[in-house]
Image (cartoon, rainbow, N blue to C red; front, side, top):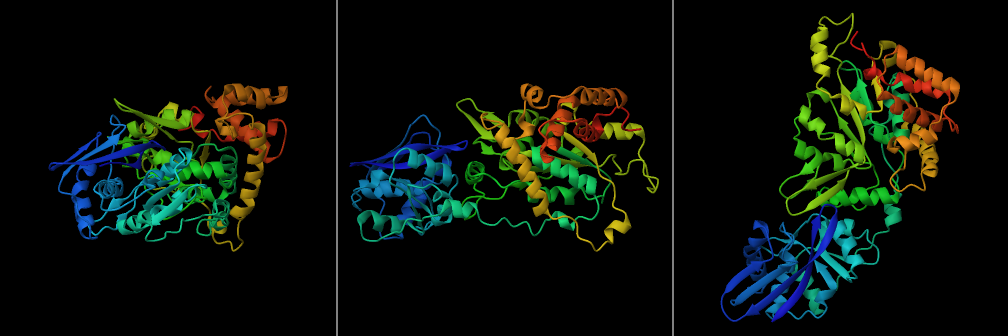
Length: 511
């Protein structure tokens, strides 16, 4: 008897429906074809034990299973449940009339219980697109898949529940999630709030500008100045995600298997990899490509603490994703693309010892040592960082103050207002939503300067020896400062403030 059951494979952040054809005939043998990997080939042992422990049996006949399309590589243990149900129906042990109306996925334990799978959300989206009635999957993944309206999503704990449902012996209630209620849940940043930061008003202002325009930022300062503390509080002032952004972000975390019984993500991700990270772990890849840290930070923040400690080749692979806001991983037979539109926040000491021209420091580095230390970061990478700001230690008087600083909620209101102005400005453009994404054409159109502002920028570039690459960055940041002021045009005061935020572009910064 020949039976068709349906599963799904995930490539990048998109799913492809897999037809599992099970044929049972006279003879003995178990033949699994259609480019399965080792985890799928080993499934016969898990399936045999799971069926036996639930009162069923692996038929002692010739079992041929084809996973179509046969030229597409299948991986992982998530097809265990698909294969098990197909074998039971093909051998006549159960009678499932509507089996072709469901996507069935799940990893089996030897007792028949189900383990979580990766990519439940993209699979559910594809199932809805292709007109399937429902989706059976492990209970741990049900919240992420139930985000998709119009698809019956059944979270099951063991193979027996699926068998009973197919035979009409038991009932299962589909999981229903109110996506909008899930999305608009209160955002809680109680742990990290800008009201805890004493002093550092100029740095907070920089953070506000970076958040308002989606600009990349680097913090330079001695140990203990508060660089890491400030960076960790940045997500608390970023504008709330749109529903589209939330779905994109949830999709990536679903593919990476990082959701852990969470439905729709409503907080922007904050990723902070250690400086020993490899370039594959950072940008994604592997023999079976998986998203890297830059994709996990999509629509959120990627924080690289102690930037010069990262290996140079690791930092260099970020150059193209920072520009294109996506990363493409190519293999001989396929190519996958992961989105990677994130805010880069980096911190670094100004010298190997950590102190720069500090009269109170007992040790200093020579100019040569400092130059060698800073040269670990290439010019093209710094070119993609809009704001450079020096962080100085907070004096005791500020630290001991009882007065609370401005809260993240108040700052976020201003940031959100500025982002709304940008959303209106770019609403006709498909891939541009905020100022940091502007290209040269948009800069010329939206950052037009009057004669006074042009003269100021020209003087600053000549006197401070600013590099040519700083020009566009200054205009982008000035446009964001104007948006925070709700000003229709960029004026000289906006340019003057933006010029301050290009420390590393100045020739002779090392003194």
